[in-house]
Length: 268
Image (cartoon, rainbow, N blue to C red; front, side):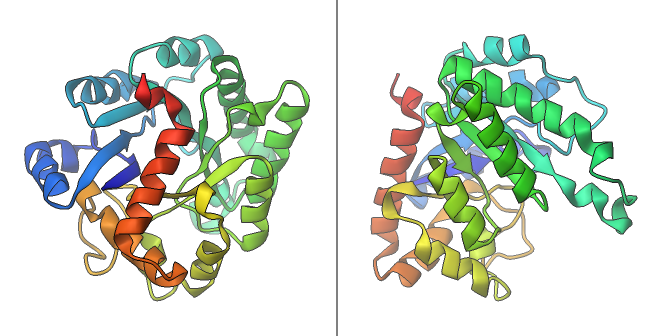
């Protein structure tokens, strides 16, 4: 029994083959999937997927790297969170890859809109008592700092959440864990270049561990470079099992238990 805690089944390359993916998930014993919202324009699509399938749930939120889309108000997020089978706020966070010279070389000041959007999501999570799904890339210091700042004004960590597709250092993992967050690993963990990340994966406690595909991206070895889908999440579990001295099946059971604990609204 495996759970994909983060996927984008509404994206065209997966939506067009949803029936075959569902069968592949069944064959691979992947019994649950969280469909992640990245824009308000696509929220209905994500939500309808969750409503149509007993083994799927949804989030509401706007990805930090999405520009030129509907900016979510606090009320937008609260209204979305009130819908059935919406169990988390996000994905949200910070993505400073745009500061790279190859992306135009923006400054930290240029990305203030990202930080304000992140704060809106944190406040929605606090008001709804739903967990956050955090995306952070080249921005871990500010991500942690804003979570702490918002926590001081009302307890951002009260509902916890997950740092998804984790690629940061052990120091960042420890800071996230100290704030009450879970850590989720994707197919990146299976890449040859991910030796440091595998050390982080050994460090995360059993009761804070999740697995995901982030599909259609980041297919694990032996499918690297192919279109990813939730049926591949057992390959992440297999690698974690090797690192932690247990079977992929036990990782599947452990991370499914953690998924149900964190996203407790899935039981509603």
